[in-house]
Figure 1: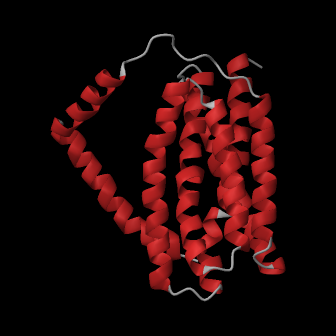
Figure 2 (figure 1 turned 180 degrees about the horizontal axis):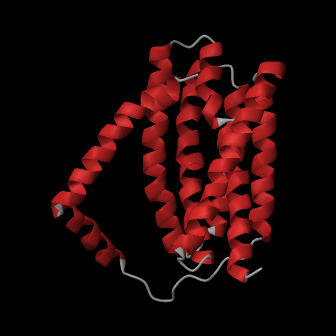
Figure 3 (figure 1 turned 30 degrees about the vertical axis):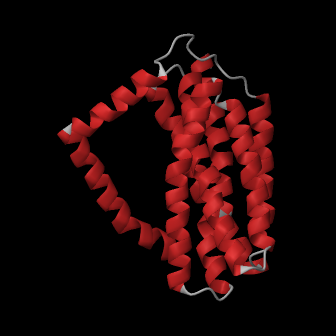
Length: 229
């Protein structure tokens, strides 16, 4: 088997393990919150805060990757924080703290998927053909693990969430620790050049139209995703 094929299979399994955290915990938070008696209006505010926090987290963690020239260390830090926040979120009895921790979870859990994607692309030398099936491993893992976790929750209740999520977080961290990371490019764009490029996109009308469409699609799908259970 060629080295790139091995890397593709390896990162596909790695991605599946990581998304097991979301499948076993993040996807069932709304159901858990409703089971605790929080109203749908309150839960919708929490879910909105989670998404806004995840949006902000993308910029923060990606910026840290650029500054420190590493995806691996940021991923390990983010998943470690996620594991702690998940446990605190489950065991808290305060409604206010539950909401704060739910929002905080978005800041770490969601962006780590993008950090892992970037790490994967660098390991695969930017080969999109190899990246696509590797990234598909995350989707397959998410679907399979969510099905299993749902059955466990139906049988044992919501305590299955922190148990399963902690196991997947530990597994993801173990894999991350032993996975080598390719070096960053020695020379990259300066921060000034980055912001100049970023601001120039605001004058690109096709790009802005695409952003508007993605935003509207997100507005339409977010309530369905949050309350489908």
